[in-house]
Amino acid sequence: MPQDKYIIDSCSLITPFNGSYPMDNFPSFWDKLKEKILSGEIIICRATYDEVVPIGDDLSLWLKSIIDSGVQILEPDEDILNNFTSIVDHVDKHDPPYKASAVSEFMGCGDPFIMASAKSRGYIVITEEIYSPGATKRVKIPNVCLEESIQYMNLTSYIKKADFHF
Image (cartoon, rainbow, N blue to C red):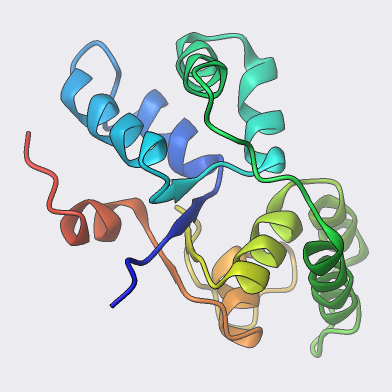
């Protein structure tokens, strides 16, 4: 049986870095996450990289060093771009409609590319966003994933599934 592959949203790197898993206190967590990226189990797409690296902090340096070691960033191809268009159209025509500011924010961030990449490749999205039924003020990854039949989970669920021990 083929091993599941995951694509990680920037919030699933930024949130633990700034909160529950600071690098100085949980180096083994970051080492295990790095191993999963190096092995190809966790995919870094262009959108995630572009959201994290410009910040210029230790997380940026950590991710940049992984990519500099030869890990390929998943770049959008024709299939991903087609799914991107489909997802953006879905959000734009959503019922009930999202607020215009929510659609604009969604189109300006990496989320649609992450979901389009997952849909194109059969990856599972790792995100810290929480499903919010009926949300119209913000487009949430879990909401769109459910509507587009894309699997997702939060980082804690991934840690359990991947059997991390610290």
